[in-house]
Length: 387
Ligand code: NDP
Image (cartoon, rainbow, N blue to C red; front, side):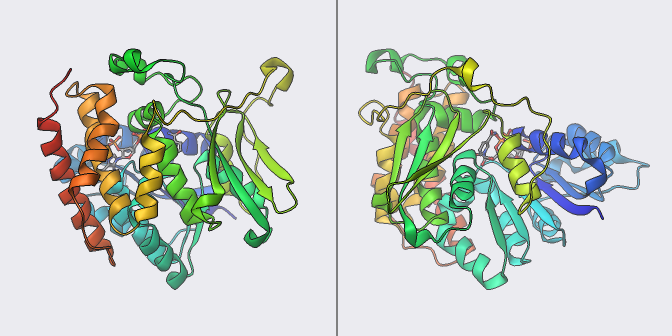
């Protein structure tokens, strides 16, 4: 019997990879809800192709476009923040949470509160509201399946083993496109250079996060929430080939690694089929052609983002949400040509240093801290003209 699925962020990179897997296994899935922010025409085309029950745009002003693109199809159209949460709360067998940024938090929470099974790609939700999201998972009896490739790798390496037997989690990082540059060269990298990731094809925000290493810092926080081994037992190692997606070391020093092509369809498939496995249309890993797998320590002098994230999660409370919000604003500013590449991490750090807030206890409090941190980060941007 076909399983039902809702996909939050259907028009993005993770959305496209997910739908490609569904396309190859059409008989196994019935699509319930597909969502986007404002890509109304693209969303409508996907809703028609996959015969979705409802299509939702987060941006209410884009609803008219969605309605006209869906006219006569019988597919329901809706728009706005509340509509996103209502769509996420519809009962389905699997929800893929792939909205980018803290904007994905409330819809992800809606899916969690319904007690569903959620393939979580939206790492910013977990970074901003880790404790709140985890309590909600427990309360509602929901299941979170890590979809980020590193966390999915760890999940696979744990393979049901007791977390108490784990000594260390080793997160691999490609190092991004600027791994071999020096501090001077890093100051003048362009948007186009930063948007060219050496191994992965991803949305713009995560691609920039990979170039600053903020992505790995956010993943460090994500790993802490998903796999409670203690912050001191989570390590980052640079692995430029992106073939080993992460590792788990057990007490006896045995290290298990998960390998695979640098293609998000692998971890997404692992979540969709969990606890079983499914076929993917990917070519097998050709290790002889790859030849070498290399590893090196991260350079936190040049890329301080991982250190800043570690300090934020050590501080706890509101710090990770503030850091995440400021980074989102700084990445947008870099993408629109407002600030230089090296200012991205600096703006995040400055916002974190200047704004403190009480530890949030509810989703609404996280969202209020997120909004205030965004406003502060915008102020920090004004004092940092493009140089
Ligand atoms: P994209 O930018 O490619 O896609 C983002 C999706 O979210 C789009 O469907 C977009 O709609 C929607 N969206 C954006 N803003 C909002 C909003 N305010 N409200 C509602 N929907 C919104 O991102 P990715 O697919 O690259 O990444 C998605 C998430 O997955 C991120 O959290 C990322 O960190 C994580 N991830 C991604 C990986 C990848 O390979 N891409 C790997 C691991 C994790 P619209 O098209 O209308 O803008």
